[in-house]
Image 1 (tube, one colour):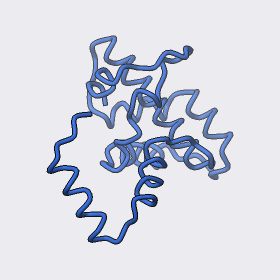
Image 2 (tube, one colour):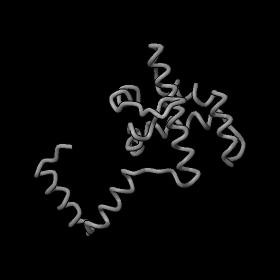
Image 3 (tube, helix red, strand yellow):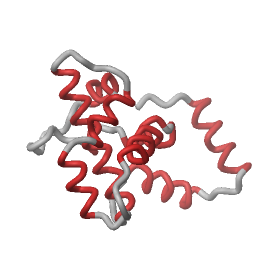
Image 4 (cartoon, rainbow, N blue to C red):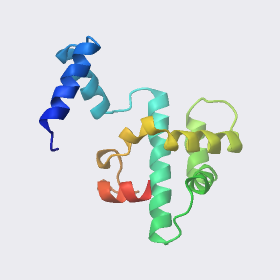
Length: 138
């Protein structure tokens, strides 16, 4: 990362204005930067993100990358999604609700921090998906 002095000064000013100590700021940044699913909701979110990324990769490879909502529909209709859904105690499955929730989740700007190369591997491997490719398909 290339940090400019004015950005650093603006960050420090923000911390002072909001009375956030350096140790607390470091802990917050560390927590956000090192996402590791520990509860079932976070684990389910990251699982859905993986399904979505894998579907987008497949569509990209087949040169049929379309709208995100259509990808969400394909993901939710997949047997893997339904099988994983049943492992989490969320109640009865509703396709329309799941498509809507997945689309809202992937398009939420607050969730973009999770779409990093370190969080996604190619399906069936342990090789990380390059960030440039993630940026292109997501």
